[in-house]
Each structure stands twice: as C-alpha cells, then as structure tokens.
Image 1 (cartoon, helix red, strand yellow):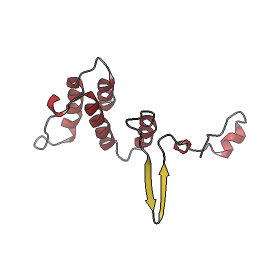
Image 2: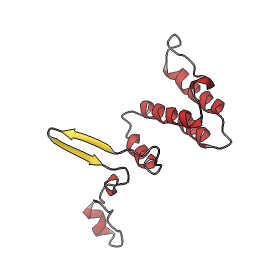
Image 3: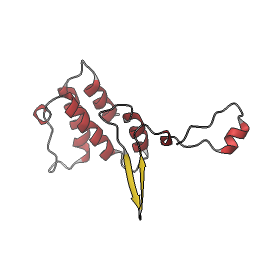
Image 4: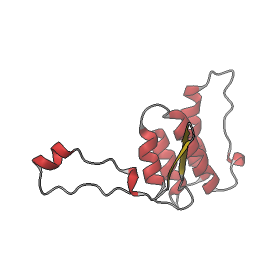
Length: 125
C-alpha cells in the first residue's frame, strides 16, 4: 500500500517529491538493517518523473515472485513511456511480446465458454 501511495503522489499534479521520498523512506527503512539503510532525499530525484520511475523499480523489487509483475506490465503498457516489449529466448527460439499485443490476456477455458455461451473468447494474436 505504501508503494501505491508513493506512485499516486508521484503522479498527482498536487503531489510533491517530498511526499514520494517520505513514502519510499518509510518502506525502505523496514527492509534494510539500520546499519545499511541510507535515507533518500529530494536531491536524489531531479523531477517527479524520475521519482515515479524509481517507485516503479522499487515496486518491482519489493513484489518479486508474487505474480504482480504481469499486472504491472499490463497496466504500464498503456503508458508509452513505460511500455515494454518483452523478449525471451529458449534455446534457439526467441519469443517477443509487444507492449500492446493481444497475447497479454489468457484465453478463457473452453469449459467456461461452454457453460456461458454469451461469453466471448479473449482475442489473441
């Protein structure tokens, strides 16, 4: 929730970098030992865009292995500055998923479609 608050403060026109830094420091102070923790300051960010990018990176680090990355990628792909084309290589095959591709959604299982004839299958590429 602190990361959501920090992201909102970074996106709000009325939000300030001070609010974002405060939220980030609250979260980071709980994650690092007191000897290793170094508080962020307003001087660490030149503008709110840079602060927002840091919040999103922090969110990625904090929520690793929770499954939230897929939702964040789908959400952020709607914004051109954060859109990401995903590329993975397995052996000799390279798989690419463009930022606005239809394959970001999973197909609805056929059993569900059979039980709900009015449901439309998700479009896939």
